[in-house]
Length: 90
Image (cartoon, rainbow, N blue to C red; front, side, top):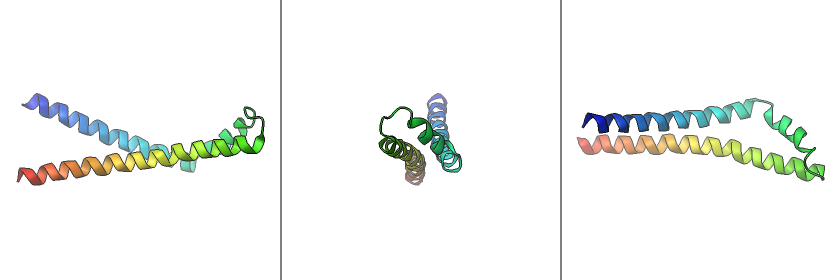
């Protein structure tokens, strides 16, 4: 019984850590200059400069806000599941 409980607790802790890493990754991308560096470097790979910059901005934006959404959703869903299990046990 305790072995299964320990495995479950480790899974929960790992999911919370993944959530925290995603949220921290979002804030690092938001406050860092990495998007501008990627836009400058992407102009070498794409033949049309405006299209390359736009594509790079779209992908980095999707990555950035994807990290935020995934991090918050994991946190909220996991918390909801834990609270509902606690309420059912009473």
